[in-house]
Image 1 (cartoon, each protein chain N blue to C red):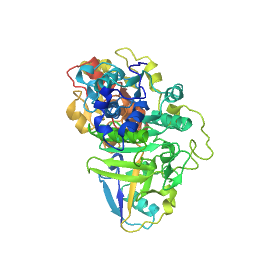
Image 2 (tube, each protein chain N blue to C red):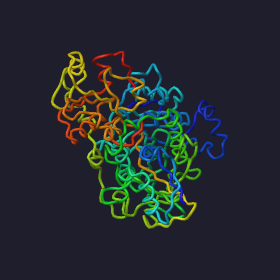
Image 3 (cartoon, each protein chain N blue to C red):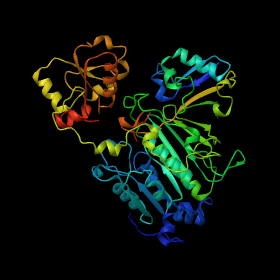
Image 4 (cartoon, each protein chain N blue to C red):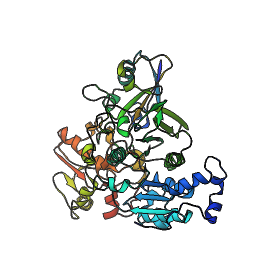
Length: 406
Length: 102
């Protein structure tokens, strides 16, 4: 944890100059600026949403901002994570983000948490802050943040994005009124969505991608709400879910109601402490997955083959069906020579093009979609199906670096 | 006729349409029409017991149908039904569905 200039209860001459445009705004003024300076906001994630959030909250004069992130900046982040620069590739996002924020505003404090937020550490980390701004990218962490915020009675400023669409609201706000009715705590994420989608219901990777500007809009919507909550001005986004569609350039608003039967924030809560959120969401814990030893180069089994073994197989001229289950626009970016493109969603209807008796190897970008395709083909009676581990990214890493990564 | 807005993650199951106009006097009837027209959507919206999945919210205009009369909620001509799924916003393949790319 890094501590720089600790905020004091008054502004210096330099700060008065810096915050001039706030100070002359009656809704902020000196009182408001001091509230900002004394505010403590926890940002979970220094990625797409965290980037604009961190920059603007720092610029606004929020006195203390905690960041939770354990990731490292890579080139694919730069299309949207504007808090990081090309020079930061390979650095910890935490360090890169803190540098950018302190460059904009040295009169603030950044607390760095180089961890994955977990059931073990969440309450301890969150308890020192006034609110959490959720800039994460996965369901387990979102449910974890929600439950921790409900338990600790902290507002959860929520935003999420998908391709061209975003959502934002303020969950779990302690107190406040909705439609004139006083609440102990506003509706929570579980009131909106009691459960996450089961993994694999919809192919995610094929549908992946995000317009680079989108997290800017949604992240700044979250920053706006955070600043409004600190200042106590305006109408906070409590009990309302804003939906944003970038392609239509349209904002819509839905009502979010507190569910009296909500297991966390309802009248008779059944979840009163943090649970195992990976299990709840039906996904493997990434840290456990990482701890599993990667197979040594040249690994091949009845069901799996790695990039090196696949290369040897191709070089030997073995006869087998080699299927790429990615989307056509991905095939345009990069491909492994000899693979036939059948996008995952088309596999069922194009199964007639394949021989169930022949040996089959399937690949995609990272190995997830091809695992699904392999399972499907086996269920259809294909006898010798191997999933290529690590997909075309592993091919680029281990076999042919001239194949671009994306 | 009610207007049904289809969110991005589900458009691949609905001929890439972003909205459709459908008949029906209740939410259940309109969604029935929707999944008759696009059978691939059925599995996305409903579980094996035919119940709306808990990570898919349906709003009649701006109100969640769970707080109205659910499937039996009356739909008038000119109403808008919005399907709003849970999105996590960005994740690698391992973390599951409908995650975008933060």
